[in-house]
Length: 95
Image 1: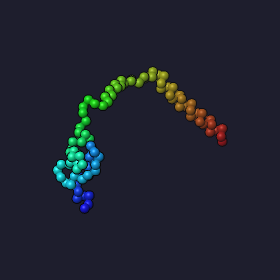
Image 2 (image 1 turned 120 degrees about the vertical axis):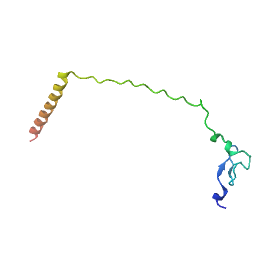
Image 3 (image 1 turned 135 degrees about the horizontal axis):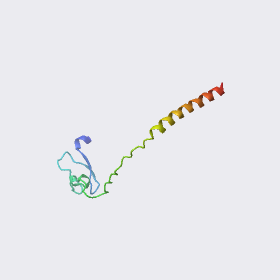
Image 4 (image 1 turned 135 degrees about the vertical axis):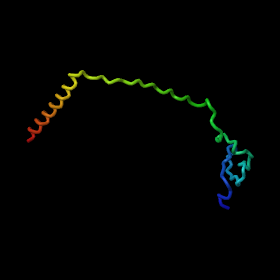
């Protein structure tokens, strides 16, 4: 007889006996007689038990600080020009 012919395999939740249900509608343990549908693993979890859910944090948006109109633009362009001039000077020295 193949295992497929015996039905579903069970391990009794009370006495740990391994058995097949022999395709019967009620999976009852042959050793202790407990119905496997009453297993605590099959019952839904009770509400209110376990850990509490974490409260989500409220993140406040931070506004970016805008630079002054005249200061920010000139300084950035000046930095780029100085950087280019320094690179050209280094290239001239290598040659």
